Amino acid sequence: MYFLKLIKHFLFLVTFCSLLALSGCSTAVLSDEHLAKRSKSQFSQMKKSEQISRNASHQAMIERIGRRIAGVAQVDIPGTEWEFVVFDKSEPNAFAMPGGKVGVNSGLITLANGNEDEVAAVIGHEIAHVAFRHSNKRMSQAMGIALGGVILNTAMRNKSSTDRTLATGAYGVGTTVGMALPFSRSQEREADHRGLFYAAMAGYDPRGAISFWKKMQGGKKRKMPQFLSTHPNPGNRIDFLEQNMDHALSLYREAKLARGEKPNP
Ligand SMILES: [Zn+2]
Image (tube, rainbow, N blue to C red; front, top):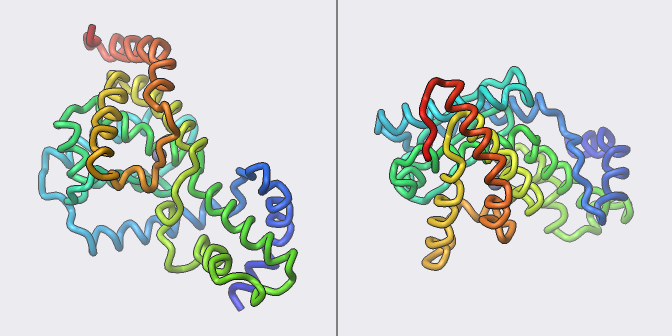
């Protein structure tokens, strides 16, 4: 039985994790290698089932920005096989899967009005999620809470169907890695923080993050953008970015000069 084997395999870590669950266990206990492999096959499946953008300049832009930021992030996640794809979808959304598979919807590029600094803010944020192994931590946490409950109650059949779904779903075969569970607010904050610096160090104006999130907030009043369903707003996100802006701007100016380019005033 796959599931029983799974319980046995993670018994120790999960018990440990469930003890910490109340205080918000954020340990990644799943195999990074396995998650990356699963992401890879799910991403290639997605490229067949979803419409890929035929806009060559959008595709080239995402590739260019992605490579530059991944180059900066390389020190945190060496050896990642990055892949950047634009999907032809109108919702302003983007996602990153473990192992470095990044998808950006054409609607997000439209919302950014083609402004590369704004798009770079989002890609920096996504790459930061990968660097922090946030999907792994989130899935580990869901399993810890659900299976922790199982262990305390000794029998799975006594658990509610929601818990069972959560336990099996977090690691189950059909789950899309990194997209089934929304990130936590503290993970969002981490991704905002590091993503801001990644983009700046790659030579993108970090003020693009502020203008982009302002546009997203404007959209929220009409209808919650899909982006926020998997990337919840940690609250005062813009204030937080502004608090880090001086540092980010100095990194940006340094990066621009190193590239032999003139920074924005
Ligand atoms: Zn996020």
